[in-house]
Length: 99
Image (cartoon, rainbow, N blue to C red):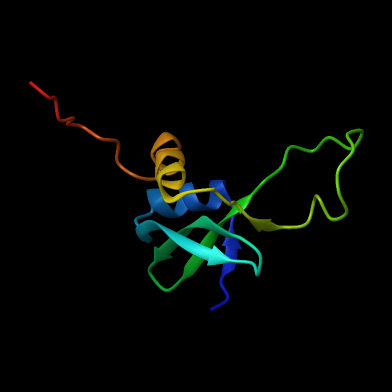
């Protein structure tokens, strides 16, 4: 299924207005490899978090470096950690300790 992209700033605004229901990692395949993206499910919309590269025109980049694309992660755990560090998912409050 194809989803449109959403940037981090509009996502944060939608969260403030209570329009976001869930943010969850999802696995995608591009033919050769698989990677993980963050799916944003809201009231009336479903989007994928967009990758926003820093604008630096003097660096050597491949063709289409500034075209919109989803933010990809190598594993589900990395995607969840990123979402928690950006404030999109609640942080862990308890840890198990081996006694």
